[in-house]
Length: 226
Image (cartoon, rainbow, N blue to C red; front, top):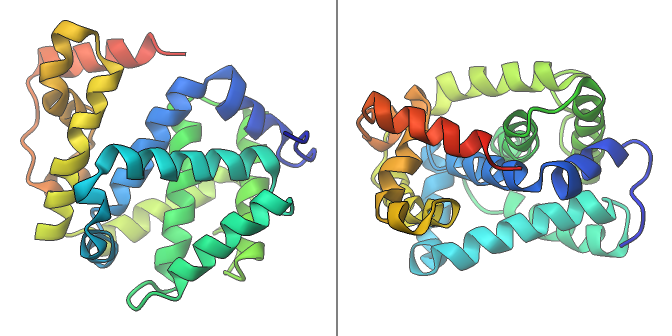
Protein backbone atom coordinates (compact mmCIF):
# COMPACT_ATOMS: atom_id res chain seq x y z
CA UNK A 1 0.00 0.00 0.00
CA UNK A 2 1.38 3.40 -0.95
CA UNK A 3 1.91 5.89 1.89
CA UNK A 4 -1.08 8.23 2.19
CA UNK A 5 -0.51 11.85 1.27
CA UNK A 6 0.14 14.24 4.18
CA UNK A 7 -3.41 15.64 4.17
CA UNK A 8 -4.75 12.22 5.23
CA UNK A 9 -1.77 10.63 6.92
CA UNK A 10 -2.99 10.92 10.51
CA UNK A 11 -6.51 9.75 9.59
CA UNK A 12 -5.21 6.69 7.77
CA UNK A 13 -2.91 5.85 10.69
CA UNK A 14 -5.82 6.13 13.13
CA UNK A 15 -8.25 3.83 11.35
CA UNK A 16 -5.75 1.34 9.94
CA UNK A 17 -3.17 1.07 12.71
CA UNK A 18 -3.72 2.98 15.96
CA UNK A 19 -7.34 2.07 16.72
CA UNK A 20 -8.55 -0.19 13.92
CA UNK A 21 -11.17 -2.11 15.93
CA UNK A 22 -12.81 1.03 17.28
CA UNK A 23 -12.75 2.54 13.81
CA UNK A 24 -14.43 -0.58 12.39
CA UNK A 25 -17.17 -0.42 15.00
CA UNK A 26 -17.60 3.27 14.23
CA UNK A 27 -17.79 2.58 10.51
CA UNK A 28 -20.42 -0.10 11.11
CA UNK A 29 -22.44 2.31 13.26
CA UNK A 30 -22.05 4.95 10.55
CA UNK A 31 -23.44 2.46 8.02
CA UNK A 32 -26.32 1.74 10.40
CA UNK A 33 -27.12 5.46 10.71
CA UNK A 34 -27.94 5.58 7.01
CA UNK A 35 -30.73 3.03 7.56
CA UNK A 36 -32.68 5.67 9.52
CA UNK A 37 -33.05 7.77 6.36
CA UNK A 38 -36.03 6.18 4.54
CA UNK A 39 -34.72 7.02 1.06
CA UNK A 40 -31.41 5.28 1.75
CA UNK A 41 -33.09 2.35 3.49
CA UNK A 42 -35.36 1.78 0.50
CA UNK A 43 -32.38 1.70 -1.88
CA UNK A 44 -30.39 -0.71 0.31
CA UNK A 45 -33.37 -2.96 1.04
CA UNK A 46 -34.47 -2.90 -2.59
CA UNK A 47 -31.41 -4.76 -3.82
CA UNK A 48 -31.98 -7.58 -1.31
CA UNK A 49 -28.22 -8.12 -1.00
CA UNK A 50 -27.78 -6.69 2.48
CA UNK A 51 -30.63 -8.70 3.98
CA UNK A 52 -29.45 -11.88 2.23
CA UNK A 53 -25.78 -11.59 3.21
CA UNK A 54 -25.37 -8.88 5.87
CA UNK A 55 -21.90 -9.94 6.99
CA UNK A 56 -20.53 -10.00 3.45
CA UNK A 57 -22.08 -6.64 2.53
CA UNK A 58 -20.93 -4.93 5.74
CA UNK A 59 -17.43 -6.36 5.25
CA UNK A 60 -17.36 -5.17 1.64
CA UNK A 61 -18.42 -1.66 2.67
CA UNK A 62 -15.73 -1.53 5.35
CA UNK A 63 -13.07 -2.85 3.00
CA UNK A 64 -14.03 -0.27 0.39
CA UNK A 65 -13.77 2.66 2.81
CA UNK A 66 -10.56 1.47 4.45
CA UNK A 67 -8.97 0.93 1.03
CA UNK A 68 -10.02 4.43 0.00
CA UNK A 69 -8.53 5.91 3.18
CA UNK A 70 -5.35 3.85 2.91
CA UNK A 71 -4.63 4.17 -0.80
CA UNK A 72 -6.00 7.66 -1.34
CA UNK A 73 -8.74 9.14 -3.49
CA UNK A 74 -6.37 9.77 -6.42
CA UNK A 75 -4.75 6.32 -6.44
CA UNK A 76 -5.81 3.70 -9.03
CA UNK A 77 -7.69 1.77 -6.31
CA UNK A 78 -9.20 4.99 -4.99
CA UNK A 79 -10.45 6.08 -8.41
CA UNK A 80 -12.23 2.75 -8.82
CA UNK A 81 -13.97 3.16 -5.46
CA UNK A 82 -14.90 6.75 -6.28
CA UNK A 83 -16.51 5.46 -9.49
CA UNK A 84 -18.58 2.97 -7.45
CA UNK A 85 -19.71 5.73 -5.09
CA UNK A 86 -20.56 7.98 -8.03
CA UNK A 87 -22.75 5.22 -9.47
CA UNK A 88 -24.70 5.18 -6.19
CA UNK A 89 -25.29 8.91 -6.64
CA UNK A 90 -27.06 8.17 -9.92
CA UNK A 91 -29.63 5.89 -8.27
CA UNK A 92 -33.10 7.53 -8.15
CA UNK A 93 -33.82 8.94 -4.70
CA UNK A 94 -30.15 9.44 -3.81
CA UNK A 95 -29.67 13.21 -4.12
CA UNK A 96 -26.64 15.35 -3.29
CA UNK A 97 -27.68 15.89 0.33
CA UNK A 98 -28.13 12.15 0.86
CA UNK A 99 -24.70 11.43 -0.60
CA UNK A 100 -23.12 14.14 1.56
CA UNK A 101 -24.73 12.50 4.58
CA UNK A 102 -23.43 9.04 3.67
CA UNK A 103 -19.90 10.39 3.30
CA UNK A 104 -20.20 12.26 6.60
CA UNK A 105 -21.24 9.04 8.37
CA UNK A 106 -18.23 7.20 6.96
CA UNK A 107 -15.88 9.93 8.18
CA UNK A 108 -17.34 11.31 11.41
CA UNK A 109 -18.49 8.05 12.98
CA UNK A 110 -15.14 6.18 12.82
CA UNK A 111 -13.31 9.24 14.12
CA UNK A 112 -15.69 9.75 17.03
CA UNK A 113 -15.62 6.05 17.93
CA UNK A 114 -11.83 6.00 17.89
CA UNK A 115 -11.53 9.07 20.15
CA UNK A 116 -9.34 10.84 17.62
CA UNK A 117 -6.81 13.52 18.46
CA UNK A 118 -7.20 17.06 17.04
CA UNK A 119 -4.60 16.27 14.36
CA UNK A 120 -6.46 13.09 13.37
CA UNK A 121 -9.76 14.99 13.20
CA UNK A 122 -8.15 17.64 11.01
CA UNK A 123 -6.80 14.93 8.70
CA UNK A 124 -10.24 13.28 8.52
CA UNK A 125 -11.79 16.61 7.54
CA UNK A 126 -9.18 16.97 4.77
CA UNK A 127 -10.01 13.47 3.51
CA UNK A 128 -13.75 14.27 3.51
CA UNK A 129 -13.18 17.43 1.48
CA UNK A 130 -10.98 15.55 -0.99
CA UNK A 131 -13.57 12.81 -1.45
CA UNK A 132 -16.45 15.27 -1.87
CA UNK A 133 -14.48 17.09 -4.58
CA UNK A 134 -13.74 13.80 -6.37
CA UNK A 135 -17.46 12.99 -6.37
CA UNK A 136 -18.34 16.53 -7.53
CA UNK A 137 -20.43 17.09 -4.44
CA UNK A 138 -20.70 20.33 -2.48
CA UNK A 139 -17.88 20.58 0.07
CA UNK A 140 -18.45 19.56 3.69
CA UNK A 141 -20.40 21.98 5.89
CA UNK A 142 -17.21 23.56 7.19
CA UNK A 143 -13.46 23.11 7.35
CA UNK A 144 -13.59 21.20 10.65
CA UNK A 145 -15.03 17.80 11.47
CA UNK A 146 -17.07 19.37 14.28
CA UNK A 147 -18.94 21.45 11.70
CA UNK A 148 -19.61 18.35 9.59
CA UNK A 149 -20.88 16.53 12.70
CA UNK A 150 -23.19 19.44 13.52
CA UNK A 151 -24.53 19.39 9.94
CA UNK A 152 -25.14 15.64 10.30
CA UNK A 153 -27.29 16.21 13.40
CA UNK A 154 -29.33 18.84 11.55
CA UNK A 155 -29.78 16.49 8.59
CA UNK A 156 -30.85 13.66 10.92
CA UNK A 157 -33.38 15.86 12.73
CA UNK A 158 -34.98 16.66 9.38
CA UNK A 159 -34.66 13.30 7.58
CA UNK A 160 -34.62 10.47 10.16
CA UNK A 161 -37.95 8.64 10.24
CA UNK A 162 -39.19 5.12 11.02
CA UNK A 163 -39.55 2.87 7.99
CA UNK A 164 -40.14 -0.82 7.44
CA UNK A 165 -37.05 -1.00 5.22
CA UNK A 166 -34.90 0.59 7.92
CA UNK A 167 -36.14 -1.83 10.58
CA UNK A 168 -35.49 -4.83 8.32
CA UNK A 169 -31.96 -3.66 7.64
CA UNK A 170 -31.27 -3.14 11.34
CA UNK A 171 -32.62 -6.62 12.15
CA UNK A 172 -30.28 -8.04 9.50
CA UNK A 173 -27.09 -6.37 10.74
CA UNK A 174 -27.61 -6.36 14.53
CA UNK A 175 -26.31 -9.95 14.93
CA UNK A 176 -23.01 -8.90 13.33
CA UNK A 177 -22.02 -7.35 16.64
CA UNK A 178 -21.64 -10.90 17.98
CA UNK A 179 -18.14 -10.82 16.51
CA UNK A 180 -17.24 -8.17 19.09
CA UNK A 181 -18.37 -10.28 22.06
CA UNK A 182 -16.80 -13.20 23.94
CA UNK A 183 -18.34 -16.55 22.98
CA UNK A 184 -20.77 -16.95 25.93
CA UNK A 185 -22.14 -13.45 25.35
CA UNK A 186 -22.57 -13.74 21.58
CA UNK A 187 -26.22 -14.78 21.94
CA UNK A 188 -26.88 -11.32 23.41
CA UNK A 189 -25.50 -9.59 20.30
CA UNK A 190 -28.76 -7.87 19.20
CA UNK A 191 -29.27 -6.40 22.67
CA UNK A 192 -25.59 -5.42 22.84
CA UNK A 193 -25.92 -3.75 19.46
CA UNK A 194 -29.02 -1.86 20.60
CA UNK A 195 -27.02 -0.55 23.56
CA UNK A 196 -24.70 1.18 21.07
CA UNK A 197 -27.56 3.05 19.39
CA UNK A 198 -28.43 6.60 20.37
CA UNK A 199 -32.00 7.76 20.95
CA UNK A 200 -32.70 8.94 17.35
CA UNK A 201 -31.66 5.55 15.96
CA UNK A 202 -33.66 3.61 18.53
CA UNK A 203 -36.71 5.67 17.60
CA UNK A 204 -36.21 5.10 13.87
CA UNK A 205 -35.79 1.34 14.33
CA UNK A 206 -38.46 0.99 17.06
CA UNK A 207 -35.84 -0.51 19.38
CA UNK A 208 -36.44 -0.17 23.15
CA UNK A 209 -33.71 1.29 25.31
CA UNK A 210 -31.70 -1.61 26.80
CA UNK A 211 -31.45 -1.82 30.61
CA UNK A 212 -28.66 0.06 32.36
CA UNK A 213 -26.48 -3.01 33.14
CA UNK A 214 -26.40 -3.95 29.46
CA UNK A 215 -25.59 -0.40 28.39
CA UNK A 216 -22.76 -0.30 30.92
CA UNK A 217 -21.44 -3.68 29.69
CA UNK A 218 -21.54 -2.47 26.09
CA UNK A 219 -19.60 0.68 26.96
CA UNK A 220 -17.02 -1.38 28.86
CA UNK A 221 -16.60 -3.88 26.01
CA UNK A 222 -16.15 -1.02 23.58
CA UNK A 223 -13.56 0.72 25.76
CA UNK A 224 -11.54 -2.49 25.91
CA UNK A 225 -11.20 -2.63 22.12
CA UNK A 226 -8.17 -1.12 20.44
